[in-house]
Amino acid sequence: MAERFGGHQVPTDAKDKTAATLRATPGILGMPSDAERSRTLMAIGSGASLATMSTECPGFPFGSLVAYSVDAQGRPILCLSSLAEHSRNMAADARASLMVTAPEDGVNDRLALSRVTLVGEMKVLEGDEREAALDLYQAGHPSAFYVRFDDFSAYRLEVEAIRYVGGFGRMSWVTAEEYASAEPDPLLGGSAVRIIEHMNDDHADALLAYCKVFARFEGVESARMVGVDRYGMDIMATIVGGEQRAARVSFSAPVTSVDEVRGATIELLQQARAQLADASGQDWR
Image (cartoon, rainbow, N blue to C red; front, side):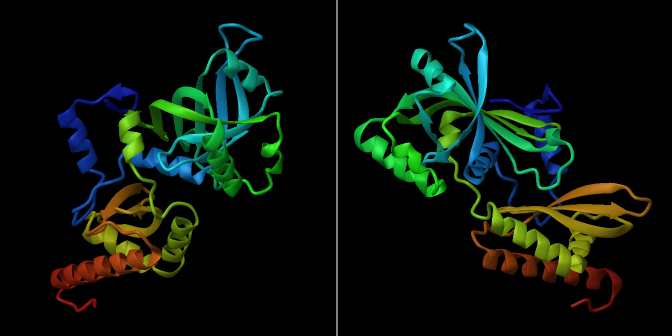
């Protein structure tokens, strides 16, 4: 489906040019697809907003807060009491949507956060499927002993469409097939946070070098890592005068662990220092 920037559809040729401006580097790799970003958000989260079709107010959507886990295909698993309003709604109409938002982490404007909405039909699970779903749910929510009570049912959202919003200006529809075949980022959650903190605290000089060499930014005063994934890292540079510029620096190959990120960033730093040395006639290594 068409990817949209700023709320307006962008022709394929223009979209490619736009994406190219975001990549700073040796650029063998690009950025995660919106399907991958959606799977990652779902894997990170544990709570969501559920929308069902109200029986009390026919024709109107009803929103509620729920906890969830995901299965291997990224389908949400919910365990809900039959007494809950949303359970009564879904008994009458299985159509539903589930929205998950990225952790706030000190962000002041919640509209700047990435979020994903999954649309589909809720299926009540029985027999072995129910037991497997309950095990999966309790693995993510160990204190949820009550889901084994008789009045609780296990549900799985059979995903039909996905809407991904990556903060301001980035949004797209993702097909169910794209979503199911994508994989969450292996650096999701705590690993990415630790990498970002380590790079910003201990390797500010390396981030500066990446911006100078790979992004070709001039007058860079400082730089900080703001994101990392299997394909590369996102850096925000401050230019003389206070201007903020974003750079995307790609790794030479996908990474799957903190150790592999360490190796990839060292490789990039060696390349950057070699190019700086060639440009200045000094040995930066």
